[in-house]
Every structure is written in structure tokens, then in C-alpha cells.
Length: 384
Image (cartoon, rainbow, N blue to C red; front, side, top):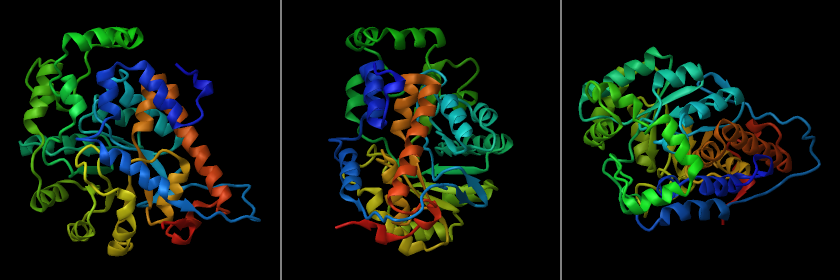
């Protein structure tokens, strides 16, 4: 595996993670849905966008501070929610949250995470957001919201783009669906990754920790996973969103919106922000790339809510493209997963530092060292 000191970009982190992880975990992290067209298309669209640099500008003092709802973060990006991080590295959720707090950016704990919202909030006070999957039992969802609120979480993220189970064929072939079924060929392949195996043996099978209180007294990891699978996916409607809006006193963000008409309806529903997302290519293989929809979404909603974006960002230059086309903030997913999987907490720090460095360099090349001057300036991006 590459030494951390020799990691220069997120692709290096990807290769390091692939070396460290057994195939079933690697496939879960890196895979998409069906033929994985959306997964590849996300990157194709990012790469097709070109920036127009400006020179002879004093760029000595970059300023990437970004304010959302009155809170100022050190940069324009955060760590997106990702489930089952503990299968890659025990304690990965907490490691990423701690790194995010050190760098002054937000971290979103996934509703399918392997740490409790209470633990994340203690580790990263003021930096933790919580993403919820709505359960079939309303009381479970409402209790998770109460726990998040009591822990000091100020922003709730509601993922809406997974109303049914998607056909993630890598996971189906590997038996890596809750509760996981490990077959002999995969077990033998796992044994070829002894460092990962020893880590799992020391810490035990990760659990959907936020669901443990509802799965029954003494439920083990498999029982909790089975309970989780019975509770989600659960079809949500605008009416069920109204219930969440009434129950949650903080900021409410919808994740997975791609249609401007849905964005407008979100405004009417009292939503505070949207994460334009196709779930990183993991739910609908024919889905449009989020960055394509961004200008349409901004034109539809104006400044009435915060527009954010994820899916496929791999470089600091991607962030500049998104901000120029109308995003207020962006989120990284797999690169952070790769970093913490391969190098634990040091890898979590490394991925944030790498992307921040690239962001600073891109802003300097653009002649726009203050990130606020990039926001909404579509002249910086050539889309044809």
C-alpha cells in the first residue's frame, strides 16, 4: 500500500483503500447500481466542464470561509453521509467526524452509520449533522430526531432518493446486504487481507448503532441489521415531510432532489436547504448528473434556500465549478471513505487537507482567492 506521505490526490487514496480492503467491502464502497452508468457519468460531466482562469491578480491570501445559515465554516465542503463505514475501518464514523471538526467543516452522520448520533456529537460538537432514513414505525423516526436534537445537532438531512432498494449487483453477488451473508469464497478472499481481518476480529462486527435501541434487548449486529432492513426503505411523501418539518426545530435539508419542480415544492414545505444528488450513482442508473441540474435548480429557487451538491467530486477544481454554477456548498463522499479505510484517522485528515490545498490552488489560478467572489459567476465555467 502507498505510504501516506506519498498520497497526492484522491485517486491515490482510492488505490490504497482497494489494497487494504477485501473485495466485498471494496465493492460496497466503490460500486454503483445496475450497469454503473450513472457512477461513470457523474465523472464524465465534471470532466467536461472547463474553467476560465484570470491572471495578474494578487492571490496571496486565499479565503475559503463559507457561511450557511449564519454559521461560518473554514471551507466550502463537508463530509457527506455514508453508511456502514465501520466495515471499512472500526470507528471510521468517529474518525471522520473528528477530522472534520479539526478542519472546521461539517460532518453528516448517516442514518445507516456505525456510530450513534450521541457519540458523533460528543466527538465533533457544533460540526455534526444527522441524516435520517424514515422508518416504517413513526415512533422510531421521531425518537431518532429527539436524540439528535438532545445531542446538539442543528441540521437534519432527510434522504428522499431511496424509496425502494436499488439493484446494486456487486453487493448482491457478494451477499453484502443486511444482514450480510458471508460465503466461503468471500471468506477466503477476506483472509488475504490480514490487517483488515485482525481489525475486525479485535472490534467485532459493526452495527447500525442508531437502530440498536429499537431492535430488542440484547440484539446482536445481525439482528439489528435485520430490523433495519424491515424498517427501510419506506415510501415518503410530501405529507410525511410535513410531519418531519413540524417535529424538527432546526434546519431541514432534503438530499436527493434533482428536479426543479421538487425544489420549488421544497421551498413551500419550509425546507431550508437541498443537496442535489443522485446518491453517488447508487440508486438510479439512468439518472442525470447533479451538476447538470444545478443551474436549473438555482434559476428555479433563487436565494430562497441553500443549494448544495454531491456525487462525483474528486478535486478542488470540481468545487470551484459547482460554486460558480450556483452551489452554496458541496459534499465529498467516497474520497473520505477511501482515506479513513486505508489510513484511519490520519487518512481522514489527509483527504480534507488535499482537497483544501487543491481548492486554494484553483482559486489562485482563477484570480479569485476569496471564495465569495466565485459564487454564482457562471462566466468562470465553459459548459459547451
